[in-house]
Image (cartoon, rainbow, N blue to C red; front, side, top):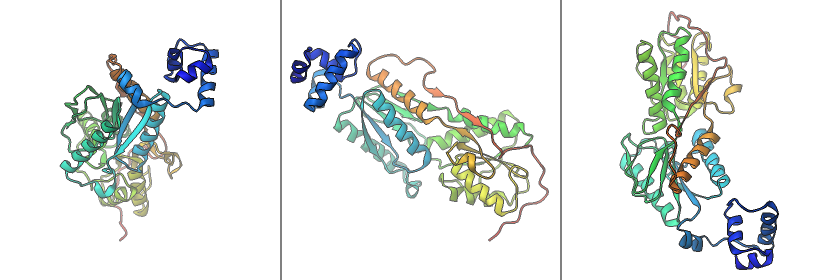
Length: 350
């Protein structure tokens, strides 16, 4: 830093301000310092910076390590938001998002999350984001002594401070279910995601709340899905055997896609015989046959909000009330329509 300051003709404090992205530096001076930084191939010494400032300017993310659309999209958005905020990005995966791990024992899941947090703390981070936390529905108790933001729920007893940020999945699922009820359907069936995911439980809760508020009966759940089209297809094959199924809310678009295949094979038209709503608004949703009505998740907005909240906690600033939860948006397409009475169960091949 001393060499950069000498070559640029500025003070070390000015170099520090430029490198850390701080204000109160003129554009001309900033450009001159950055040019010298490139010429000298200067890299900040993060270890020395942490000793001096007590900060690493690094944010850690614990991710389920899943290739599913939601978690992977959220992870990419988090990395971009962290970098745009001027922090470096550290990742620790837990592998619990793999479908082979969906039924893993809850203690093993907790151990993986705690282990991932510990590995980030050993690397040196100023705060941690828990992306798509997975557990048994009871609060996670972490020993982190840095701020932690959870993109789901269940955060309790962090050594530092914590907050829950993300899309309000309960409200979004209510909106999806209410949309189907408003079309005259007597009730709405639900294809749930795996119950050790907070997201799946939130969506089931919103579905139940909407049915209760609308005075609609709550039908039994089909097979629990694992977010995959195959599990949606299996649940759909169960539902086509029931004559009173006219509306289905699937916990994600991939399972809705599988259900659409099952309905088509049974000779049921969508939305003529059955209306279907998904969740996520994947890039393919608008191009299915028919185009899928679904809840859109704005992953970039969720990630930016999570990082903003975490940095506020890192800097000991207050987080405004109501800042944490974002609203979902129902995108209505051609897979939903008015209710039509089915007189007999559809035939199922195989």
